[in-house]
Length: 249
Image (cartoon, rainbow, N blue to C red; front, side, top):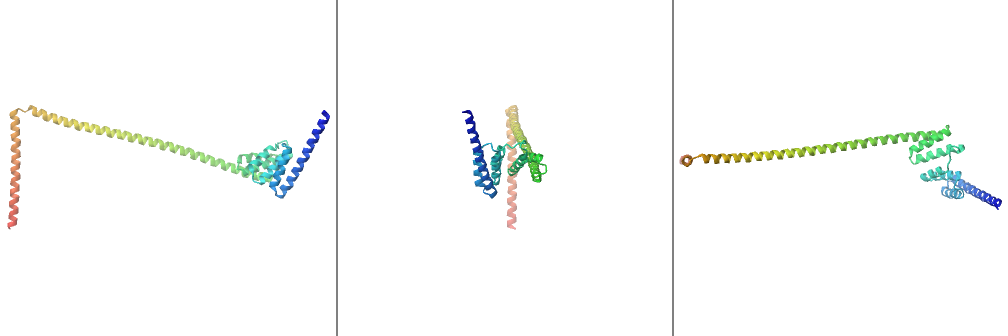
């Protein structure tokens, strides 16, 4: 029973491998014709028969790249598990992975992958050209990030300065208002005190006069008012006489 089981498993594995190769060959023919949708179906059928197939993942990734499905292409390339040990295909894997990263504008990944490709195939001119392009884009991106960071820092500094200035202005305004209020209060207090002092002086003067002196002071004031009134009446009479003279003439 153990020997027979092993034979059956071997036959199943052989059948699965044969079926997968048939699906991959169909996919490759359709890929060359530009029939990418149909090729996609056959490559995925091949993966269903063997999920560890390097060729199925790799070819499906190339087909997805032609359909501009870059994210899925990157996943399939990573799933192909082509490593440094796979010497015949490693340079191509890193080249394709870097090319996909360029399409995604993931410049750091593109530089890393294309550098690995050139390490394995230094004479690949396309890899060199793409590596230089990705490296320049990465430098440009880093410069823009630095400029944006500096702008953000300057903006934050300006905001902090403006905030401090506004706080200082508000503090100065509050101080000035308090000073003005204090000055007004002091002036009012001084005026009130002066009035109180004058009233007090008058009261003291009145309190110091005897009844006889008060009577004499009152008579003097009345006499002064009488004299003033007589002068006013005299001026009115002269003015009336002058107007009458001018009229008669």
